[in-house]
Length: 229
View (cartoon, rainbow, N blue to C red):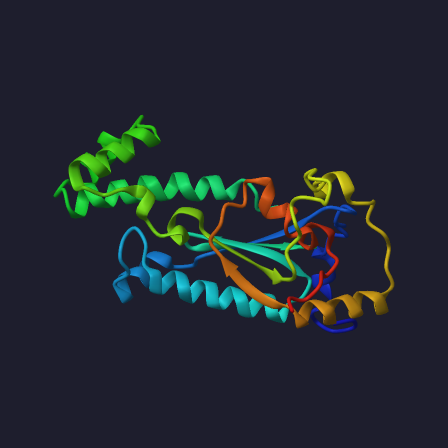
């Protein structure tokens, strides 16, 4: 671009630098999602076809970019983390319970959107569960895990044993992780190749509890684990 008519663009560049030893989070939100939903007749509040398509796309992105260590998908968006995601597991449950109750009241209960929204104002989880069960015979606990917990993608290595040989719980990554080291470009490339050998898996599990992270220490450490036998 130098010495061309586009050189003026350089004047708009800002030398922003990322803080060292911090997580880089990329949020990919749906564009024109309502139009897409209407065009293909997606079911409300959840359509498994749409979620499976979104997950398949996310898997291909992780395969293409080995520096991505984990991705979390819920509703029409994905959050990918480069070498942070925790609070969104709670959001997924809260939002899905509300949406499930709302659309059940509209679709099966014959209520208008306005009336259903008004009745749900100020309700807590137990209230919504009661509406679903007593009015419509729906046990929310029986809903598919993908709807309640979202989708978490990561590279699969051998899981850690959460109990040591002495019976003590394995230390958390926060307690054991050393200060991040500077590594050479050749070492970085070697790590990328190791990550590319690992299978990218889709899970629908609780990522709030410590056990998920204790059994998958490679996610936070950035160092590839042992491939499953």
